[in-house]
Image (cartoon, rainbow, N blue to C red; front, side, top):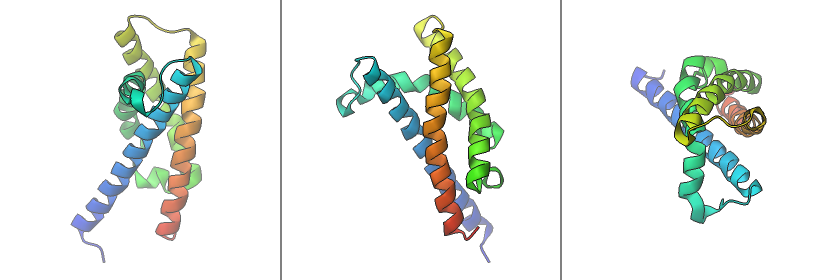
Length: 141
């Protein structure tokens, strides 16, 4: 039987892995976006990419824990993970848009936020669904 400390450690490691992957996914999203607009997006521009991604990383990290994006019960299968990710990203992108507007002094056109919502959801959802598949197999769920 697993002790409480071991169980908490396993959960913390799972959460840390999810957060790390989420940040990478949102950084990839920002790099793709910057590249599509002719801005620096490679490893040499990691600072600029991080600055571009920051509002949405903040939005995600502020809202997603409250909406179950790291709870095993709501993310233990690929279907649950995708559903929870979509719900949490719906809130995260709104908060991210507000943070971004504060950072740049204005809101962008609605099309920017629609593309951001869909493209980042594809990246977050893909990565997190793959994680849920691996995690379920690892624990025999």
